[in-house]
Image 1: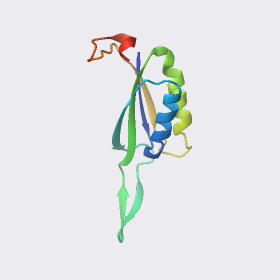
Image 2: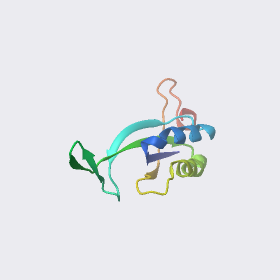
Image 3: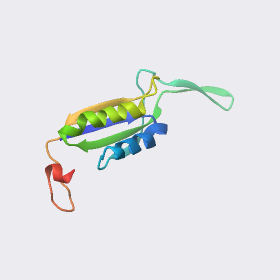
Length: 112
C-alpha cells in the first residue's frame, strides 16, 4: 500500500476530488494548509498599504491506495491540478506498512 499526499490549489480541489472518484478512489482526507515553495509569496494590497503574503492557502490531500493504483492516481492528480503556473503544488508517495479499519478490525487492502 502507498500513501499519496498532494498539495494543490484550493480552487482545484473539487475537480481533483471528482476526477479521483471517477477512477474509484475509495476515500481521502483533506486539510486546509498554508505554505510556500519556489514562489516565496506575493505582494498584496490591504486598504492603503502593501502587504507581503508569504504563506499561501493550499489544500493537502491524503489518499491510501493499493500499489497497483499509484500511477493512475498520481497521473489523475497531475492532469487535474496542473495549470502550468508556479504554485501548482507537489505530490509525495510513501509506503504504508499496514492499515486497520477501526469499525471491523479488517486490515490490509480490505481496510482501505
